[in-house]
Amino acid sequence: MARVLHVGPCDSPGGMATVMQTLASHPPIGWEAELLASHVVGSPWAKWRTYRRARKELIRRCRSTSERPEVVHIHTAADWSWWRKSRMIRFCQQASIPVIVHIHSGKFARWVGTKHSRRSKSIAALLSHPQTQGVSLNETWRETFRAIIGETLAINNPIDPRIQLFEGQREENHLLIMGRADPTKGHAFAQELGIHLKQGLPNLKLTLTGEDHADEPWIHAEGWVSHERRQHLMETCSLLLVPSAFEGQPLVMLEALAFGLPVCVSDQIQDIPSTVRSARYEDLEDWSQQVLNVLKSPPSSEELYEASLPFLIENVQGKWKEVYESF
Image 1 (tube, rainbow, N blue to C red):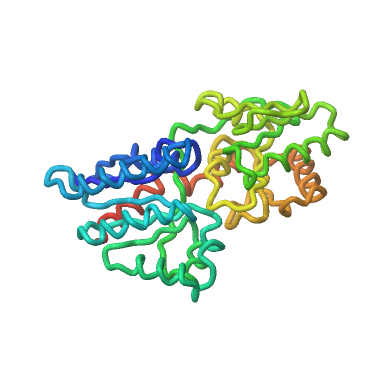
Image 2 (tube, rainbow, N blue to C red):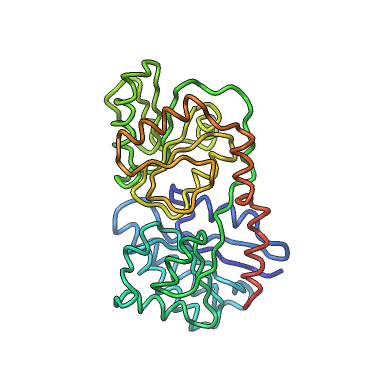
């Protein structure tokens, strides 16, 4: 059976890790998959050591007659994530092993700059190798990347098959934001929005994951939550907020749809399903109006679930099989 090795932050909290775990747990027919962690939450030194160990293990496996993968599937963001992964990509190319470069970051294009930038030319040259295939998260990103780093394939993020449509009663006026404690995720704005909405909705509640502190008693900061707690929140809250400054394709948005949970996102997020509401980035009045509209007249859970169907793992697996077997 052919083997694909996924390399990236599979043990770190976040959507990229969830995507890696879902793809590795449900490889295409005729393939088996393994994970190699290249990142750890901790100090810069701990991160560097983890990367060095991962690169060493990648080299060992690629030189092994029994463990050599048919394809290496590298998951990357921008900035230092790219620079670390680029060394791994070059090694795979030198070892004549096909490599997938799966770009997850919503700020990748901004970080790359114009097609004439030194960074753009370097990345484009790396992706032009005959045994290398770049992958973007949707058609909008594919078009964006085409102008600066060349052609990529568009393949959606997959939804964990354990997620099921929830058709029970949801709590009234309970807002939810999920994500790591990063300023770009919009936790501070979500709290500002909640305080603004509270004036007209006295029973409003706001739950934050990723953050462990809140100043208001009706704002619940829960830090990083378990899979079970995450599912409970998705099944009981009224509306998911994604007020991020940028995202590639927020997995939490897709998962919410599969649960039947309405979603409102920042207009900085591209190519969203038609059932997802969009509000202008950090525009308090626009966000307030959009949220109130959804709370007053939410879409049906069945309509939301239907919008998630293209992202189910069974609808994504076949595309990866085509890519893996195209080399």
